[in-house]
Length: 166
Image 1 (tube, rainbow, N blue to C red):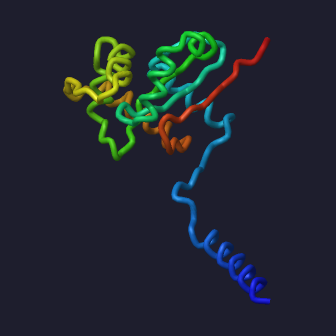
Image 2 (image 1 turned 120 degrees about the vertical axis):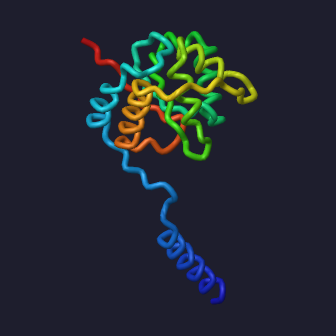
């Protein structure tokens, strides 16, 4: 009789704790039909890698270890580049405080090379800070606005869009 009471107690305990602890991140993920038109408005700001038939919209933070691993992986893998067209957007994770780094990458003469140079090395390097630039700040603001609308809550954050066959 005692084991049944313990079993019932355990079940009640599990039920109450699962309802008492809401998830840490509330996801408001938009359906692709709503996200894709928003993403297409910022495609001109993307740093492109690859030439494949499947578009992959990617949000990364330059200091985020997972983002850095992902960028290193795709930059070194010719097969992935032949299968996918990565459209990369730099989007700050607040805890890394990368706003100035993102501005510097986008302000450079070759943002793709600067991003790869920064993100594909083991140790996070220092980067030359750029001066405020209204055009670059507008680009960063546009990316941030869309990222918030589609609820980009982690990095790297990927949205895959297979191109339809004619």
